[in-house]
Amino acid sequence: MISKILKPYFQIERLVLQFIAVEFFIQLVNAAFMMILNIYFSKKGFEDHQIADFISLRFLTVMLLAFPLGLFIKGRKLKPLFYIAAIGVFVFSMSILIAAEYGHIAMIYTSAALWGLCYGIIQVLALPFIIRNTSEKTRTAAISLSYATYSLAMILSGIIIFILNHFNPIYFDEFKCLLLLAILSSCSIYFVFQMQRKEIVTLHSGSRLNLSGFDWGTIAFAMTPSLLLAIGAGLTIPFINLFFFKVFKMDSDNFALLNSFSSITVAAAALLVPHIRAKYGYKIAITRTQSIAVLSLALLACTEYYATLSYSIYFAIFFFLIRQPLMNMAAPVSSELVMKYVGPKNQEIISALTASIWSGSWFFSALIFSILRRHGYAYANVFLITAGIYAIAVYWYHFLIKAQLSKEADTI
Image 1 (cartoon, rainbow, N blue to C red):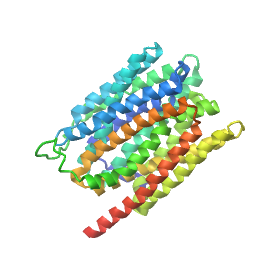
Image 2 (cartoon, helix red, strand yellow):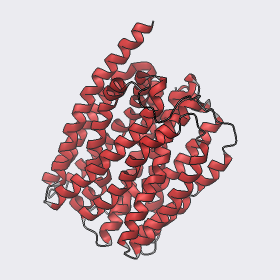
Image 3 (cartoon, rainbow, N blue to C red):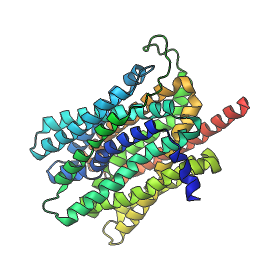
Image 4 (tube, one colour):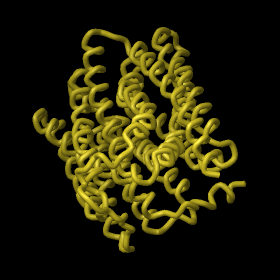
C-alpha cells in the first residue's frame, strides 16, 4: 500500500525535484516566520495592529508583482528568476530580523516588502514551471509534493525551534532561532545552481500585454472559490500564533512544536492526495475534507469563550490539529481542478492571478484584522467570520466540480 502511494513521487522529473528542493528551503524560513515571528515582534513591544501592518506589506508586494509577472513569463525561461528569489529571500529575511532587533521600523517595512517580492516569484512560478516540465503521469504527484514543502518545512523548523529553545532557552531565543533558519534558507541558492537540465519553454507569439486572448468568464468562475478562501485565510492563518499566545499563553517553543506535529499530518495528507484523487474523485478530495475543516475552525474559535477553563486549550489544540491537514490536503487537488477547467492557454495567467489574489486578499485581510483588533474584537469573532467565508467557497467548489465533470463527459 505504502509503495503504491509513494511510487508516483519517485517518477517525478529530476529538474522538477531540484526546483521543489529550492521551494523547501525557501519555505523553511517562511514557516519559521509564520510560526514565531509575530510572537517575536510581540515580545519586542509591537502591538497586534503594528504586527498586522508589517505582515500586510509582505502580501502587498506579491499582489502588485503577480499579474505582470504572469504576463512576462509567457514564452520565457523561468530559472533566471529563481536566482533572484532564492538570494532575495535569504538577504531580506536577515534584514527583517536585524531591523526588528534594533528597532528600525522603516527598515522592517522595507525589508518585509522586498521579502514578499522575492517570495512571490516562487509563488507565481511554481505551478507553471511544474506543469511545463512534467508529464501527465507525474503532474499530480509533483504538484502535491510542491504543496507539501511548506508542511515539511514546518515540521523541520518547528522541531529545530523547540529543541534549541529547550537546550538553552536563554541563548536560543526567538531571534537566534529565526536567524539560524534564515541562514539555512540560503541552501535554496545551491539547488538553483544544481538545476542544469534544460527546462521546457512554452511557445508564445504576439504581445504579452494582449489580454483579449484569455477566457475571462471561465477564469472568473474558476477563481472565485480561491478568492473567498484567500480572504478568509488572511484573517486567520498569519495570526493563529497570536491566538494561542495571547489567549492560552502558549509560548513560541510550544507553538513551534504544535505546528511541527500538525505539519506531519498535513504532509502525510498531502502525499495521500494523488491516491485519494484517483480513488474517490474531486468531491471527496475537495468538498468533504474542506467541510470538516471549516467546522473544526469554527469550534477552534469558540474555545476562546471558555479560555478560563483549564481544559479548553486541549480542545483548541485538537480542533487545530483536525483543521490543518484537511484544509491543506485539498489545495493541490483544487489547483489541478482549476488548471484543467480553464485549459492550457489560461494556465500561466491563472497561476499569476492565484498568487495575486491570495497575497492581495491577505494584504487587505491583514488590514481588516488590524482594524478589528484595534477596536477590541475577539480572535473568536474574527475566526468565525473566516469559517463563514470558507463555507461559501466550499459550496462554490461543488459547482466547479460539476462543471469540470460535465466538460470531461462532453469530450468523450
